Image 1 (cartoon, rainbow over the protein chains, first blue to last red):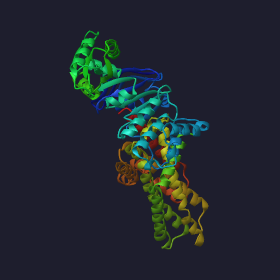
Image 2: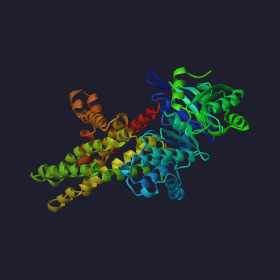
Image 3: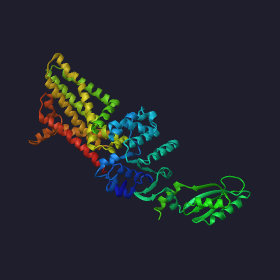
Image 4: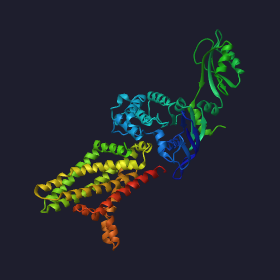
Amino acid sequence: MIEIEELYKYYGERRAVGPLSARIEKGEIVGLLGLNGAGKTTTLRVLACDLLPTSGTVRVGGFDVVERPHEVRGKVGYLPDRPPLYDDMSVDEYLSYAARLKRVESKDLARRVDEVLGMTELGDVRRQLVGTLSHGYRQRLGIAQAIVHRPDFVVLDEPIGGLDPLQIVEMRGLVRGLRGEHTVVVSSHILHEISETCDRIFVIQHGEILWSGKEADLSSEVEHGMRIRLTVRVAGASPEAALERARGLVTGIAGVRSIESREPTESGDGIASLEVVSESDARDALCRALVSGEVGVLEVSRLRDLETTFRALLEEGAPS
Amino acid sequence: MNAALLIARREFYAYLRSPLGSALIAAVLLIDGLWFHFEGMSRPLLSAEVLQQFFYGASGTTMIAGIVLSMRLLAEERQTGTFTLLNTSPVRDSEIVVGKFLSAFAVITLMTALSLYMPLLIFVNGKVSWGHVAVGYLGLLLLGSAATAIGLFASALARSQVIAAVIGAALLGVLVLMWLVARAVEPPLNEFFSALAIHHENFRPFQQGILELRRVAYYVAVTYFFLLAATKTLEARRWR
């Protein structure tokens, strides 16, 4: 478990973080979301004992980062925004070196290096010099060094930075794969990425937690409801008649705040689309009502514009 | 394996892999060789005087090599971001400093050992005592150790290698020039400054083949002081 109480970190006169309090449970994947300069990296560096806090208490796995930094470092694996790689070593040599630094016992060393090479899919470049690796491989090697000693806590600072779309998908899978064995804290300034991988989000602005919770709650709280798109079909009816029938069926459902017609997402007889705004997730109730009214449901999807949501949150401040 | 030795081994191989280590060793051996030829072999001198001339010249290149080798040790890691690996591993700051120091000192030792053929050449046409050779080399290693520790401290302070080299050279220069300050002041201050000088009074006995324990203690103390200062600098950086 990670416990942060009233953490402050100053660089000279400038407050980078604080006041910041949070609690991260064992096995969680938690995302720190914020714009550049919000205090994410500083917070992560404190968790990894790379920096010490100006004031406040931070306990990682029960150890205080100021009083027992040595123990904390043994329990944390850290990937900074720029992976700490020695270009003049081979991938194998580098991982063995990192493992030894992190007190992996000699008898477990070769097995552990093989395991993380497999997990991060670096086996085919294990003899290659680190300096010759592509950006994607370097990021993976950065994660490999962070987990080589089986840490309880893995702290990843912008792990998808600079990756191409395919590498982003792979990296997401890699981070999700850490769930269970490790408690993971990952930072990003892209809400979509955080929402894809994390159980819980902390939105950070000016060094303080602006909001915390699940991504679905963030959308519903900031947008003041959930937007749902429905595409329906009524056999033998005109699109207008189908729309009216569907509108009539969903109007009475609890939590539905507004219903608006939309351009049908596909063409055909009796096909209509509508957008429903509900106070909470009403997708199952909507489907039940439509089907019981003999209206076919061709599509039901939640409309998410995460970046707009994020921007709205930062502009409006914490939702009440 | 002890973390300090682990770090030392990595850094030592890094020196051997990079052009810096071999180029520096080659340059030092070239300068030492030229000095030995022109100052030692081209004039009518006694064998012991030739050896003294060799140690005098080698002491200068050893000090410079200590600064050049150590300037990168911490500053470069900070520049490339690799220092984070050390800083977030369960390794003490003192182990980082000692490991880094040992790697550069190992290169100094290798470099110094490779110059041994020059004193051996004296045996072709002359005769010097093995004790003189051994004490002179001990002096070179102690001087190299002190210069490396000073450079390492500068590397802990600076963000770039160039600035580390400038700070290291300035600190070393101040310690070298203490003999001039000693000349300029009255007793008993002159003895104090003279005792602080990293080269003159403290190195001359080694050059002459005289082993004085207080001179050994001086170099050990300078090395220890600057390694401790480098450790404290790393510790303080975490609070910044």
